[in-house]
Image 1 (cartoon, rainbow, N blue to C red):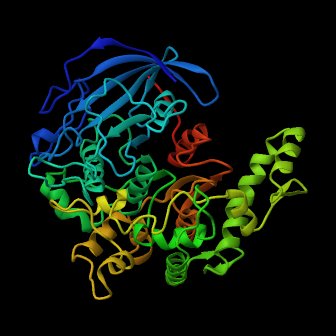
Image 2 (cartoon, rainbow, N blue to C red; image 1 turned 135 degrees about the horizontal axis):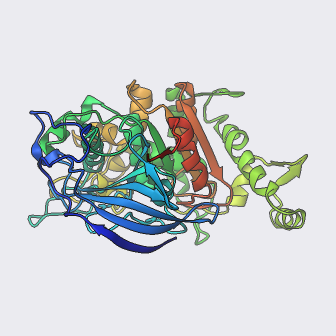
Image 3 (cartoon, one colour; image 1 turned 90 degrees about the vertical axis):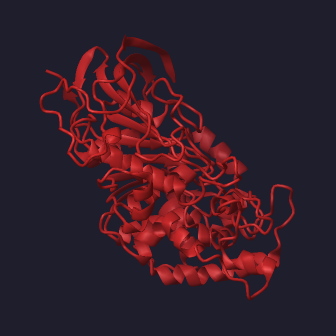
Length: 497
């Protein structure tokens, strides 16, 4: 909860251009750098706010708030292609030095819709609701916070052209990272310790930023926008319920939830569900994922892997935190969940019984009617939505139908798994914080399981947790995320001298 946002000192409105530097050690713009992409460190508002941390303690934070009109030289729509920077100056009366602080890079994207920070007058709140935002918690911990807007799938110009469809959002966020890195020494904070954060589609984009750092696949798009000539690789990733691997999401959903009824009680088409679920087996086998205690993952052991590696530990943590009386009451009401020697036990079938229903029909993402957010994401020109899987396209247009020529490349541009499996990216982030609700049926629970397994196989540092009985957008340990950032970046709060 944020209270009492007030302007303590009014400094000239943030803008662009070469400005006088108060700090003699500040970087000097290179001759080749577009003047419009030079951060103005003396253009800010000094604000004071009260931020309640994850433990319930309120902190008075004085911070500098910078507004950057656009992070690219040739914006398509600066309303979305802009960013804000918040830099802590004083926390609970103690001056802080943020020059070496990690940078939390926050995107507020949901449903692949456009996201704007242009109208914000201070550090933003939590777009998914509930408690203090991760950005605010980071600011109260002494970190620098960058909030970046991005174009989204629903944007359409006066001539009917959709200008925020794939890959606009990820290109924009990459451009924003490049802007930050190109202004090393002008933007406070350690630009080599950028940690991304996002939820749902924003979680997918956060994952994609981490997986695809400096990939040349995006270069032409970035050049067209006039993005800064800098790296777009990030140090670490925070991703909550990431909606990734879209081209395989329909298959994964049926493998996971195909046996469950819709909330209405009716069953999804059994023939379609079985076709998709069967196809998922080939995809999982093709990734050659391995997991400790399971060997190579296939659809024959993927369910047990999810139960033993993620779901039973999640239920155990939840039940262990209850009083004995509350635990007995819970177990009596949820007979499929066993409890023995302080650990929860159940089978995959038991878990599905506990889950109860699926939230989406079949196909869940590339639906036949072209009505889902994802079909809009792959729209182009004046075409609002397109099929992006052969399964749905051929169901509607016959077995000879072919995907539009640009679709395969755009799928690669939008899928972190491409950069982790098919074309492994050496410049990816090596630290990952991944969270999802165990009752989140917005996509298959195997999606996060596969991401976790692949990152582990690559040797990355991965902290993954499924929140028991929690749904889409849950964030039950935000304070731990803030501490995790300090640990992986090696940061200790600096005190100004």
